[in-house]
Image 1 (cartoon, rainbow over the protein chains, first blue to last red):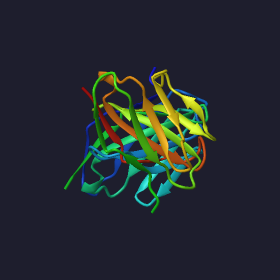
Image 2: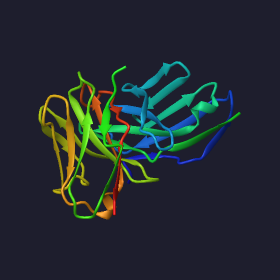
Image 3: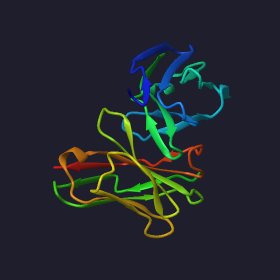
Length: 110
Length: 114
């Protein structure tokens, strides 16, 4: 079983729509969860972190965590063409070890 | 805005040679990490480092790899005898705190082993 699973996509949404990205993880002991954005050929860029069940909002981004279902999601409201990238879910394990999913490729169509 | 820096941006080496990849973490961060990303694949955790010692390491981080903080600012990854399959992008990251700490990534070093 993979540590972190994401739908690889590609996911296409029109400009201005909501993009929904999902992630599941296998280790019930994980406490910290992160979303990164990675443009082609670039390094991962931190978007959001979430540690508690529920929603966390930051501008156009909302992260959702459900530890019982081992599920993390990211919603991007009012999607812009500049949001087109690969979105990586990362999960902490054992306190200082981190696992990334394969990423979901998002294309926002103008 | 403080950032993680890495040198070189691209390193080409022959199989069997040793390489050292260098990183300067954000100055007030205490936790340091190395990751690799083979082209088209996911980001893979290699090692975390705190207080001058390895905190966690993955199965990938075998005896050919080592890390060091030689001075107050640099953090290095050494690959002793490179193999073709070591060709990848290597990212350094740092955070203020372990586990719950948000990690900030450097721009990466592309390692090509021929």
